Image (cartoon, rainbow, N blue to C red):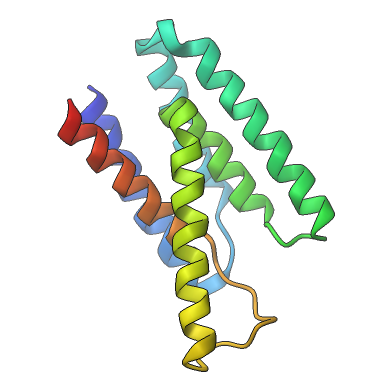
Length: 144
C-alpha cells in the first residue's frame, strides 16, 4: 500500500512543480490531496502516528516563523506542502528539506554564475521539493 501512496504523491508533486515553476504558486487543492494521502498513511501506520503529527507541527511552526522573519521569502504553499509531506515522511522530512534547499541553492548559484537569474530574483521551491521527495521515495523503496 505504501508504494501506491508514493506513486500518487509523485504524480501530485510533478503537477505541483509544473504549476509552481510557471506561476510561482502551489494550489491548495494539491496540498489538500497530499494531506489526505498523509492522513490515510497515518491510518494504515497507527504506530507512527504521533511522530508524524509532531513532525508536521514542528515543520509548520519553523517554516511559518521563517516566512515571517524573511517577509514572505518562503511562500505559504511551500509551508503547506512541506507540512503535508510530514504525514507521508514523518521525521524523514528533514532529509527532504535538506535535499530541497541543497539542490535549490546549487541550481540558483549556477544560474547566477551563468547569468540566467539575478541575486534578488525569487525561485519556485516546488520543483526542488518534488525532486527531493522523489529521491527519498526511491531511497525508501530500494531499502525495503
